[in-house]
Image 1: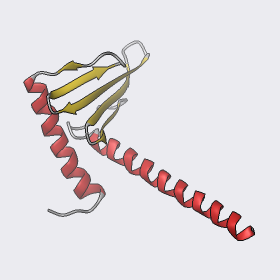
Image 2 (image 1 turned 30 degrees about the vertical axis):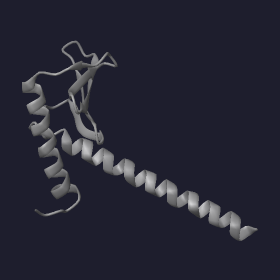
Image 3 (image 1 turned 120 degrees about the vertical axis):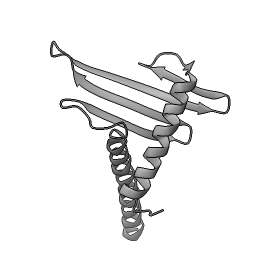
Image 4 (image 1 turned 180 degrees about the horizontal axis):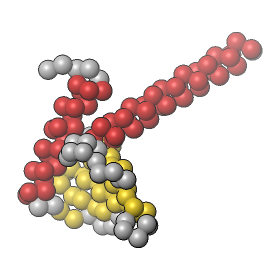
Length: 123
């Protein structure tokens, strides 16, 4: 009985380690992605990352001129019919051709940087 309990505890421990490792990698990717568009201004936090095979997230935080903390999150859903965008939990709408091309370019840079800088894959 004790063996069974210990194996269950160890199994849960391994599962939690995998979850924690995945979260750490996602945080590192998001932080690295925040630099895709250049240096982040002082006092700002910026993240850009791939949530799943169809979803990209851009998140930024800053303090405005009167000292109020501001946040802006943009969610891009890539679909066969085009790219949709939602901000501040609002409704989705299509993006322009220019914004689509910018997102594609950013995603390509992100993937390249993640593979080389985080995962050590050399082209």
